[in-house]
Amino acid sequence: MTRYDLYKTTILLIAIVLAGCDRNRNTRGWDYAPDMYYSEAYDTYDPNPNAKDGKLQQQPVEGTIPRGVNLYPYKKTDEDRLLAGQKLVNPVEVNKESIETGKVKYEIFCMNCHGPLGDGKGNLYTNGKYPYPPASLINVKMTDVPDGDIYHVINVGHGIMAAHGYMMSEEEEWAVVNYIRTELQQVKK
Image (cartoon, rainbow, N blue to C red; front, side):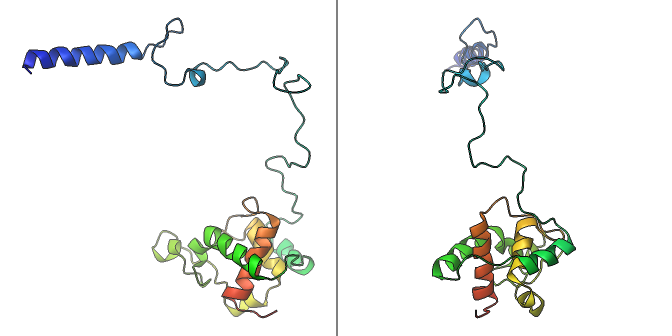
């Protein structure tokens, strides 16, 4: 191929690419997903052909909780942590299934900070990305706290630890408590 042919081919490719980037609604252009570029949204009170009652605005599904609403009655305070420790009782039976569920959730949500042994030497701390040491879950202080205290910290967080309550179901959070108690702390019940 000569230099002249290469020049012509390059000009032709550039022209094709530029023609495909046409933003004029009157021509087809080369939009990959035109329905995403030119959305045909409903107006507020338009009829909805997809709903049984024909209304666009529907009631929330029964039993759902709006985003941002937390039905957990305790806040992220030391007073509420103590109160939760006194009032909350673990409703999830300690068995092989709940411990396995707790282990899976612990490995997903807790292990990066608290470590595989629960000693506070997780990956984020040991590699220097996290300057403040996470709490050890296996020291005497933690083995003496009630289950409700641990559940409360998982749900709303504590100190600089973020809340995990919106990421797990109530049963999964209690399963994590079961895992911490039986496998990491090896507390016999």
